[in-house]
Length: 325
Ligand code: SD4
Image 1 (cartoon, rainbow, N blue to C red):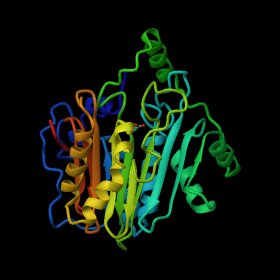
Image 2: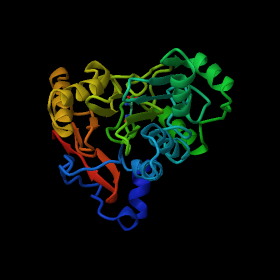
Image 3: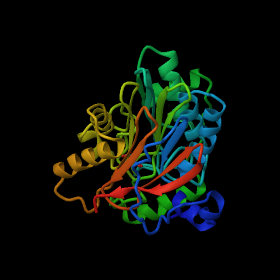
């Protein structure tokens, strides 16, 4: 089973982008940003976030908007068939269907979302259309597909040959025991602050591998997988969606920043809240990343292995998040 992270590690990321921490041995480097952070800035989950940030930062550096940066950034990952957790090539549910969840949000509260969407490669762009072209926030399943087709999106088979083979291997045991940091993770969530001080976020995923047909996670839920507020900042989640939904995770991270915590402290606060709600954290991974209105960022997770990509005027780096264990 190939994950995007394994792939990047194999090709020697360090030489491509500079000072990167090893993904294999998280070093618990600080993901509390230096106090002199500046805008524009873009941050994303996991190492595929580097690809997203490069495209997003180019938009920001030219004076473009945060909402364009996050949408165009995550599309890079949705379009990558070798990435088995987002867009085309994503792991299917236990019946063999690739079903996608995504949402997008601006600091002024505008937002759009799609869930349980099939056969459309770029759910994030459909979510943006929901935000911009409808009076609603969320469309799901066949309704989301109908809307996407009306908007000119094309139907595609999202189950690649490689992912189909992995599914056939999984079928031989048919056990739902997600491997943390691998099978249940790697959603791409991206947050950006543009030169004009506008903040936005995007989150897109194929969700938990081998989930029940019809299962929707945190990623398309405004407040759970993503929350953005021009008064306080932005936050997004990765990991087991059920645990994130139970705590309204991203909204709570933003609320903690509004109440004076730094992005890093706010992520720690909500991870601790998740800990208090779950007896057994052994197989439970959740990570948050957050960005405040001054361009300071932070991240924190339950287990090691979570990392975030950061793009700003110093270049592009990947850092391991500190974790509870
Ligand atoms: C979900 N949070 O559907 C998503 C899974 C994921 O990184 O990959 N998160 O539960």
